Length: 250
Image (cartoon, rainbow, N blue to C red; front, side, top):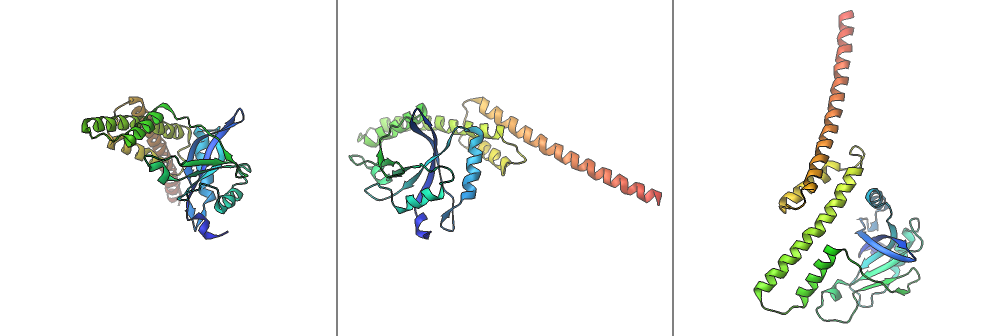
């Protein structure tokens, strides 16, 4: 395999099929090690996601490119071969961020293809908070008004719905932590601590139930650690007791 294949931004698309239509819900970028996708980290990520999103699986791959034609290349074909064990009928999404950033253009910035490189039709259906946030950003991008108060208001609206989107992501993380076994989940406490720290930094005050759940999770984790420490101390005391008995009998 050529090393240059992975000098690009690539990732996997997660979703499922419903009534003959593929639905893309999530995606994440590949971890690249020695110019190749790390399939071990991919498997770990998929196992973690399956805990809270059991109905989602790999349905395709994506590539972020600067090319104008937005067509799958040899890189994608090789990537498909790497993932045959997960799905041998992958779709491909090609995205050009330069086209997306242009204010006025008729050029498509996203195209989707089947595994035979035939272009597919698609619809975009965002969740409410995400949709409003995206629409607001697009409105600001197209708005040439010099009204500073209007711009400030638009920014506040965007920030509000961005927080709602973040809340949805935090709920997913909490759901994962509630289902996961702390003793078998790498960096469990670090994830919990980072979420707490993030919420504190952005001064997130909505939905106290999120904070309550995080506190409960931390309490449960600390209790588990304490029980483990107590058990270990009891074993040490029993060992010392046996040693003392041996000493007395001598």
